[in-house]
Image 1 (tube, rainbow, N blue to C red):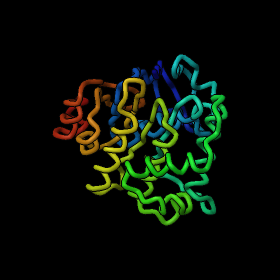
Image 2: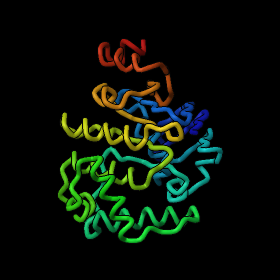
Image 3: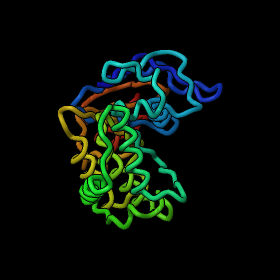
Image 4: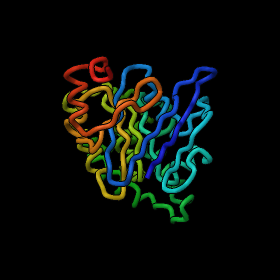
Length: 247
């Protein structure tokens, strides 16, 4: 579903990704782990199309198309979802308004009919229930006054509503307490664990992988994938640290 080949990317004049190659087929949850500064967030931002990140070499193919040739909103309409490490606040815009406009915009791009207000509210209520989020929360301004855990749960509700084919989740577990981690992890499993979907799960810690069991784990260091293995690789990292494993 996602094929990254020899990807090089820079921020300003600083090279960050230095020949990254990775394949994530449909039906797979693939975890990316690595030390600070390895390029994990750069990878997610490049895939999402965030301005300021320059791809200098390599290619990214998503569902058979050149992902890098698409604008961010086109990538979203094609089925790519980016979960932020630090979800932003949007004062003056309610979650319900934001999510309905986002969903119907994507449906229009795919040639589908927009959902009516009633249809959308039913869908939103169902997805909010998966994340144990009250609908009153979705009537509030986007992330304004939300705790870290509430922001991440609201973002997973967004993912459920948009129903992407591929999710890039950048440290979704950061800022979550034990209960919120279980709720968010269960939400990821419910929404994205499917033969026709895939997830690139970026994390520092094994604790999220205890809830969202990955099919594969890769270590990103120095801007490249240096090792790929099964779930046991994450357990080695947890026990021995990056220096020992990468040596």
